[in-house]
Length: 287
Image (cartoon, rainbow, N blue to C red; front, top):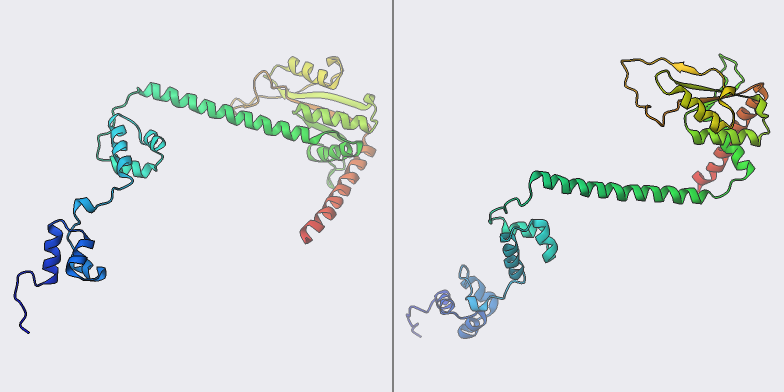
């Protein structure tokens, strides 16, 4: 059989011609009577007609983003308004000119400062709330619990005996009023007579010494005249002191006279706590 020699005999030429006439892929497939997988390579490089293109769901978002950017909106505002990613906004509008600054640098700095102050306020409230929850969780304290706390407190902050310097004395020094209160409560728990307690103040010489003496005497429940001689620390002009201001009162030194026996009880109790804590932790490690 003789093959007809026509300009449209080539399947690709026929497919391209139909595509350029505005035929859809389905229409070309039906016209030529070929399968889709055969038609795809024949139409390579030929764009589909406009009427066959499905609308892109993001076209409307892109158009709106460009409109808002033209109005001077920032990327963040556009992102929040349209509910899309900041990277998408940047891709859609990056060819548009940057909006003019509507605030002076001073105004922008003031807004940033207020925002930072608000964050600090929220953080401080959260910090206070956490501390208050922890305070309430403690609840009451038994005599045994106070005894153990006092032993640990003294062993951390009090004077201790050394093999090279035998000093079995009970001397406690601290600048924290709450630590002093606990230590005094602990001494009362142990029935240490108040007449055996000796108090004195340690403070920098250029601080308000009289105010500090009144402060510590009031805390200890004694008259300032009952304090021992205050120890003054000489000021070094080459150093920068941070412990200054109206709330700086130095340290209070509490010494228990004839305290050798009490010191031995403290040291023995401390090592008893160490052994008990170690034994209590062992089952936890084994589990």
